[in-house]
Length: 113
Length: 114
Image (cartoon, rainbow over all chains, first blue to last red; front, side, top):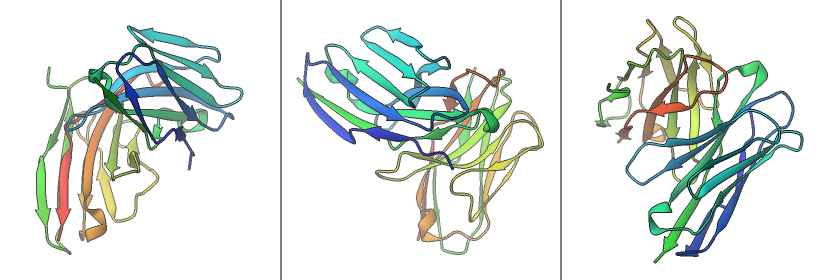
């Protein structure tokens, strides 16, 4: 069983604040790290898939970094907006398990206007 | 292009009843997944299928069976439902590469066992 941990569990910020979350995972036999955005009453949607140590991805105001040697990834949101309110999930897969994705419990973000 | 389609969307079962949750994808994906979502616990993997005819247990497989009869469809069966199986169930698929491809999710099935 893979252990994926996310912190913080929840976060309340003001509109315009920048914020970041952490995803920790086992560093051995790394395969891929995914970030998903999950709005209430909808299905999770992928933000990024990262596979290489030192990888950085960006989509608009959201970016992510990856450190496979120490087993962590950061997700950053610059200038948070109310529409960024969602649960942010990371998922990890290990080399010997192929594409078998195991998710963390998520970080709930609430942005107040 | 429908993506991942799950049926039913809602279901209420009595303890001991059985049912099958259906999932189909039209994206030619190799990998398919069943997850359950419980408050404060994110998504927990029930079963995974890397390709047609293969299945593998996830974190919480007890009380469930799965079937991957073809590339498109991956069904989840509850043989004797228990109240602890009350949850929201998500089917997902990814591929066709098995390396760095994102997962696509169905709309979820809200199951209540009374």
